[in-house]
Image 1 (spheres, rainbow, N blue to C red):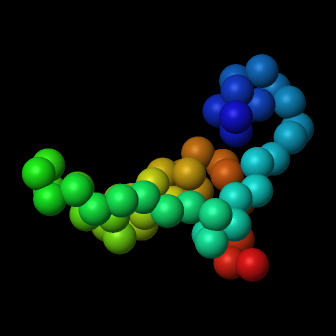
Image 2 (cartoon, helix red, strand yellow):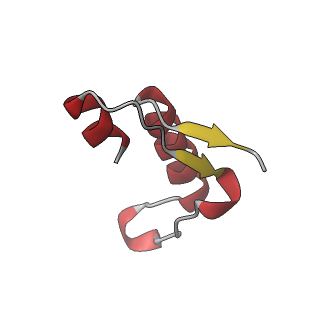
Length: 54
């Protein structure tokens, strides 16, 4: 959604609480849930999403 706003020149901002983001562990594909959370929170921040603790 933030990328859409950015692309179309809208002044909106997406705000995502950290507690609302979670992913899963999957041993078959070496998908570490804790690591993926950090990676994609970082990705969201880099794309202009405001990530908040509370």
